Length: 478
Image 1 (tube, rainbow, N blue to C red):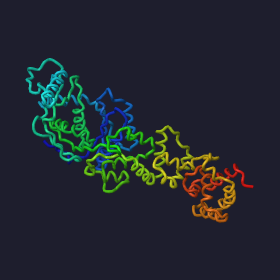
Image 2: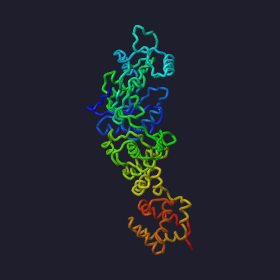
Image 3: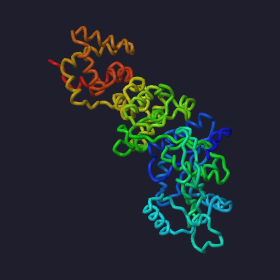
């Protein structure tokens, strides 16, 4: 019994997380794959919160999921659907199956089920529960609580034609008559998922391969209701660098952790897209390219491995590609998310001026702020001890001779380099002997962008003022 993919209708995908915790990095990748597939085909990307587990579902977790998706830039169509709110519809379908004979009432107690399984194990038989009520005459039904079970086929095979995993065959004698409606009238997850996907018009179910076994059982619900099945696409999970299932020992697991470490959202989207999917040798790309290129055929069957070095590389490339507007917007979000105050307008302006000179040194927003610290600092600078060692009497003498040249130079990189080189040559020292002290005077530290880039960013007045501060604090040689 093979599934029948839908191919002639507009693409509709969905992301259906359970609100029991943060947005896991694996869930974020699943959402991204669904978003890319739908957006690249002019389709719809839907969001469903699978909150039927009322004991574990929390509003806090729902808010975290929504916040994570918004930060990632994965917009969904329409309102987010609550699965729990659709319980009456799920129950309605269960009763339709009951009326059609594709489901039946089962009155077996939990004790009877446990005893049947123990007996089967003792006899070396399958412990799959076979209800004695499957073929019972309704006239023999007791006036007692019951569940509704799906009447699964007991011979033959169920075949799932999976767009990633290929043909998957499951023997029907390995599939139980699963419960679709509990004795309290509440639907089970396995029923609710199918009903919701059908009612929402989902054409492609793209999810983790830990759901692959569920597909066979869920496909039987589609068959029982006479509904066309979606295209199934089960993607391998993400593993750690050691090849083992992703866990806390491998580092950050939640999307908000990556946000708070300062990775820009476009870099995370790019990196997650490359976790298990490829387009030739393309490593770094933008959203438009990803939407155009993404297809299910590019997803591999082996688990992807989290690689922080590759993430850092991709993130650095994105900083160099991003517009100043996008960088500043992302920085504002980062500062807000991590409890930092917003930059004042004058500091934002200074940072924007510095961006062309510092983005090549940054892979995260903290690294960007560190590289641009010279532009954000207020006078008088606090000079680190290591940098201060270069500000000796000889350096101050050189500053005294350099200052008139800076006062009169045209403020271009070539002119500034020429002025510094001239002073160094006149005083028979290497340019480095002047660059080190200048670095300390302009930034207060030893690790900075080029001193001439800093001068360009700071401008003539600020550059001369910072040099003047150092000369005023330290007496020149006698």
